[in-house]
Image 1 (cartoon, rainbow, N blue to C red):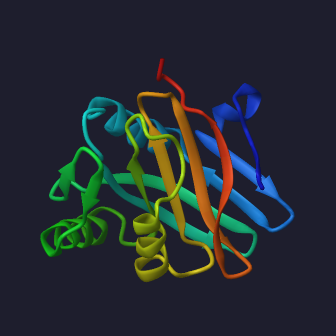
Image 2: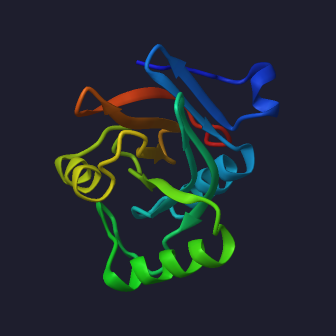
Length: 166
């Protein structure tokens, strides 16, 4: 498991950073704040979006978080429809032409931080590259975690308390 930054000096450069022998995850502070705020503001249902950034030999950097505003949101389920993906691809092409989608984020309001069987299916089907991430925020319990690929499996890379959630 990656060792997560829980605050301190590195927070000036990263909203979320975690490292281990297999690589790193670094999330820009503005991107991190935006995705946590999106989850917090909608704590009555699951919400989500995509992570925009770049892959490097040593890991993944997330530069921006784009809310999936056209997703179907329910208490315990989030669905990215064709309309959702159209909105996402149009925005990424227009705003971040030199970046790629490096993963997705979503909330688990009062369910804890984990990937459900459905979440793992989404990760395997739509985010299969070694650098692709899944970021989960529980805005009620104040927890967050990052999941990614290690040796062909989707695993928890790091968890920590989510900032700004009480």
